[in-house]
Amino acid sequence: MPAASRSVKEMAAAAVVLAMLLSSAAVAAAQHDYGDALHKCILFFEGQRSGRLPPDQRVRWRRDSGLHDGAAAGVDLTGGYYDAGDNVKFGFPMAFTATLMSWGLIDFGRSFGPHMEEARKAVRWATDYLMKTTAKPNTVYVQVGDAFRDHACWERPEDMDTPRTVYKVDPSHPGSDVAAETAAALAAASIVFRESDPAYSKRLLDRAVAVFEFADKHRGPYSSSLHAAVCPCYCDYSGYQDELLWGAAWLHKASRRREYREYIKRNEVVLGASDAINEFGWDNKHAGINVLISKEVLMGKDEYFQSFRVNADNFMCTLLPGISNHPQIQYSPGGLLFKVGSSNMQHVTQLSFLLLAYSNYLSHAGGRVSCGSSSASPVQLRRVAKRQVDYILGDNPLRMSYMVGYGARFPRRIHHRASSLPSVAAHPARIGCKAGAAYYASPAPNPNLLVGAVVGGPSDASDAFPDARAVFQQSEPTTYINAPLMGLLAYFSAHPNPAESGGD
Image (tube, rainbow, N blue to C red; front, side, top):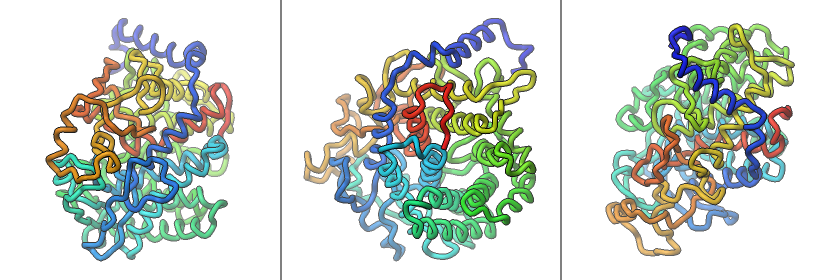
């Protein structure tokens, strides 16, 4: 609402939240083991693995699954990650997950310290799969599993007998959104592996170039081509234009080829770079595009992209309590950023990551965020990001960590099939599709701890959390909640004081 129409009560509440989020006292209140949380955040991905598990698998209650994925279509689509608490492999969020994991390693790599290798392995489990999905020219396999049939069952991935239907996009059935996101993931990962595995890095970048060319040449949303399969779970509501700019931005960063810079310049208006700049997630990349490209401006490498810097500043202003009047971004009394909708922690981790990344770009450039008549320092941005991380780890009204296995109190009844059903070791006999319903309905805690999983968490201004398996909007973990959290935890493990600047 306009500032002039805000009530005294609303402005006072905003002032309280602002003080809580930005004051040095709030920063000093939390003493978390961010390194331990980072290790657990990465370990979560091993619990989401599909395919044949390696000898060094640490989540031992999981076993091999989906070993024939792709066989019906004559391709090998084993591997990859289950996106959340079900047993479908959705390519769109998986690619976004890989992109964000890589971005964290690119910007904060040195901060990962002893966790660097396990973080790279988490990225590679995704990119090895994405390389399989793009092995056929002008084709991207974007989903394995019938979501409706899968969601009608409550069974372990090791037992699943629902159809492993394969869905793809190609020139006759375009999917520029999912293809361009896949290209972004491969390009970003090519930077991650540039020094540790140059040959793999080159393969990733070469494939990213080819996949982006396909995405751009054969334009259209995959939600139209595969509507019955991908909607409503991962329907692309924002259109494919943002993914094309996002993919081009990552290809430019990875390759430094002039053609991608020119592509961004040529398509900035056509593809709506200034549209919906306050959104960022698996569906909408606009805020991420502006933050990513702004680094070029702030580092003095490309003044042409100044408009992206303006957009990024405007976006940052919407996240600062007491400054923002943006109706979609609010803070709870306990200090949690929330947006209307389900699985709120995806917004918390993704937007906090952008706050942290942009704060470091500004720090290196000696810049500030311009918010009309006021401004904000990089330290203020980092404090807001850190406050969100600390909320997740237990600094909240319930004194509950929303990361499974971290702290004394955390969610015990998460909406997750493999976690909530007995492991194969504990119950060797198969548990059928409907037989799992009894475990779903049970009030007992899950028998298997999915360590590191961050659930959807409080979804409104009440800071409430029911810890109920049936309330999936709040109790289900996803890979794209944890992916940006990796970079955040790495940074704060090395720089617990937000007044420090420590980007790589």
